[in-house]
Length: 453
Image (cartoon, rainbow, N blue to C red; front, side, top):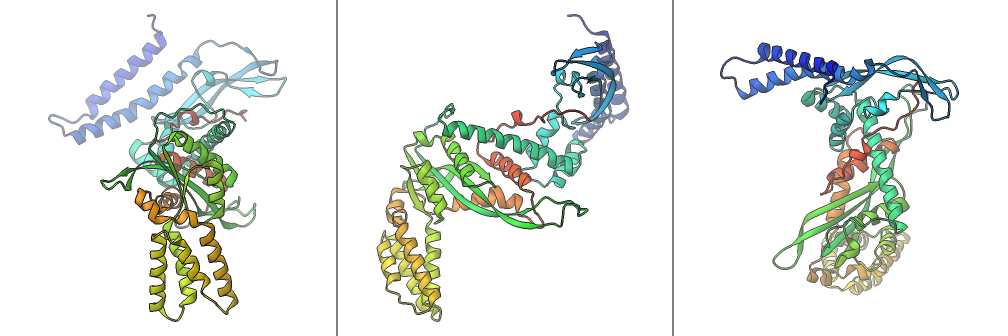
């Protein structure tokens, strides 16, 4: 195999520098492991950036053509060498590449960038991979600090944010395309398992948002608000010796700041990927929000519907407080009786007890009307004795924990307010990161190329 003399010279020089550095920086006899690690890391920081830069720029020093065809049909002419600074895992890289300009379309280009796998970003794919691994759990400034401390990668917090939004947005676009294919019955079935019993849950959690603004006030004052992030989870459980479902062993998440239509498509596709269409049993869990049950009815018409027992108890508590506002002991007794009726598949008894209440105040009559409707409409979803006998979960604890785990712990910390696009990208990345089988982000690490300035 014929060797490039220029490349061989670069390698020989790097080997020489590495040998000299080893002789200068390695500790004496019987070094500790910590001393060796520190010395070798320092040597790498000294040698690797220079080696990377010389190797990547090697080809651009060779002879080049002066004319290249342009996509517009014209001809681009060589105008000189331009330098682009990139942030890589080995430090800053000053990339020198030939610049061409087309007089027909008035656009410039760097043809050599495609050959070395370069896109429009200022960071390498390896750096973006590190960012994508950290930002689901850490803030942008924290991610910057960790990258510098552990990997000696020096990026700004704003660069971390831009990269995270780019990757998250790309992943969300791919998920939407997959969801569209699924709902048009074009999705290739990649499922490999057939679940025995699959749980699907959905809920919404409020997230602090802000309208687009600038610190200098040029885009108006900061306007903060809350928006709902709809969160879904698909999971399987272990079964104990008594046949009861208890510990969760697989879970997959999805979340979006967009509306019900988008969320429904994402959740339906996620459930399909988890094998809901081949599961022996599908159980859907939620609170009393109508949008959840309408969505479940459309997506999983044959599934077993269970309304969270603790949400039902909250409604009993509301009626209790209205009836026995002046007698706490009587209220506790009334509440216990109603909860016992719920656990015994006796929703009719709960409804009858509420109907027997004859309030005089208008607000109490409204509570009576609403709660009678609530328990009547959800009676089939409140057969808790039947459900627990079979072994089903009757609480949406996993669903509520998902809202906290996926959304609140990352997006609703002290002082946080998010632009909608950034929040959407972040919940997309975090849901993918926290799922039992994390999503491969490799196809989404690139940044679309654009016309150079």
